[in-house]
Amino acid sequence: MCWRAGLHQILLKGFFYTNPSTYKKLHQSTYSTIMAFKIGVSFSMKWKKKLEGTNIVQDCDSDLVPDDMKQTLSQLDIIVCLPYCFRNKEFKNSLKNITWVHSFSTGVEMMMDTFVGETPKFILTRNAGFFDNQMAEYVVGQIISRERHFEYYKTQQAKKNWKFKSFRLLRNLTAGIIGYGSIGKRVAECLRSLNMNVIALSRNAQSNGSKDANAVSLTNDLVTVLASSDYIISILPHTNETNGFFDGQVLQHCQQKKPCFINIGRGNAISDKSVIEALDNDWLSHAILDVFEEEPLPSGSPLWEHKGITITPHVSWHGIDPVEFVKNFLKNYELFCNGQPLKHQVDWGKGY
Image (cartoon, rainbow, N blue to C red):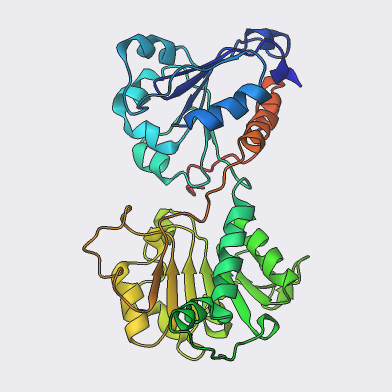
């Protein structure tokens, strides 16, 4: 592996700086890397154990670009960062010679917003596949908790009340997945392992009802998914095409089965108003929301107090394994060093 030789890293004011000069043998140019995110001490130490020659300096506020870093930034070829870093104009404008940007997150809408009207010359890749397991666990946990009435039994415990409540078996339920990328496929795989029926909206469905390797029914008809599901799981990315995807009367197609709506994709897919309307009109039985139009969710939002809504603070993706992150990035880095196409490249036109 090319990354083992002579690797030198410095964490400075929130930036993780790498200067692997020994990569000349694999590529004519010498590449430098900045990792611009707040990683914390424990994360840093795991990186240090994994990568030889690491020197850790105190982590500071990554929103600030000190003057002595601007020249360094202007000479960089590769950046690994959270997309929000590019909202800092000083940071963005200092990157004169950038060739490749690797997003620490799966969603890159902040990058898209930053470059509206521009055509970036660099390659953008994202951390596709890195958060699949965590997000699948979140969905499975929420469904099982809801079907087995864990919250109900907690209240009964407080009352010292021994009372049984009947429940539905997962094998008799259907989950509809909207956003069938790597995360959606992992969610489907986990639900199928519990014998739950799964239907997914897919542009590439050859025919309605065709099945993939996980025995997931594929359809290109949104109404079919909405009308036949007990759980609607939105894993849509943030793009112009997905803005307001579920707004208006769209969820009226759910009224026969009154499913529970789970959103772990992005908050732009449905407005707060549309969520409340769907619940109040009895189109949905419940909504489990991990993402929102505005984050953090304002204290004045009516979503907080609605009895039909469960709120979590964008945590479905949490649970980062730094060693796996290093491996994920370095696989692409080795491809880059060898002049080969990178995996998980973002299509600037599609936004993902």
